[in-house]
Length: 246
Image (cartoon, rainbow, N blue to C red; front, side, top):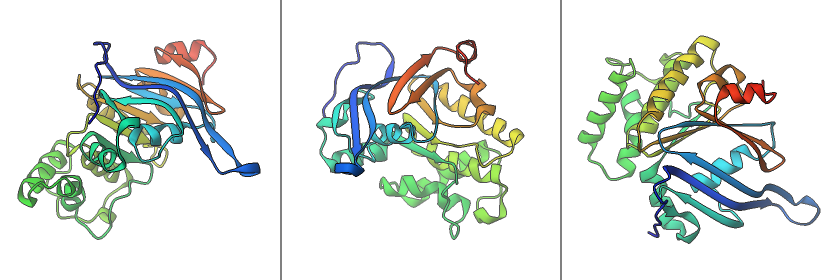
């Protein structure tokens, strides 16, 4: 894989002049318009903005699940635009963990089986995968429930399982798409406290796309998007509020 030196500036993600268009002709929509974006190691960065502004598209190209039209993307020193598709897939399997709004757990699998999936995909022996899954579930307060099905859990508990699944292969980049919007205030706060602890790892970065203004206060930094572009970057939540944010 192609690698670069990020000059010791602590950047986990470095995006420059990235564009992405969907459709052609009159149906053509430019979702990303020459976007510049950075995320640092050891931080939880929130990406906020109105629906349709390009937040999820930006996360998708950073994660390598969506090809982009032009520009440069570097994720932990790897230039995504220089990789073949099969190498991007391998990079994503090793480097990225995903946490979704709807949890996306497999209802017919036990909690331990759900959490083990990323390790099994990466070729880890089942016994070792289940051992790691069991340890993570214990750390997240679900010890003793490894054999339960997801349908037996509350929404907050299911999100904890989703977090365990996202972390089981020790990814450097954790991407969260609306991780709290399906949860009540108290449960959402508990999940954000967990994610903030996850982000404290010096070699890890957590990026959260959210409309949920209840959790903005947990951000280390905030990036606002408007109409396919990064409009503003706020170094703290307090700065975001001072600049007129919610």
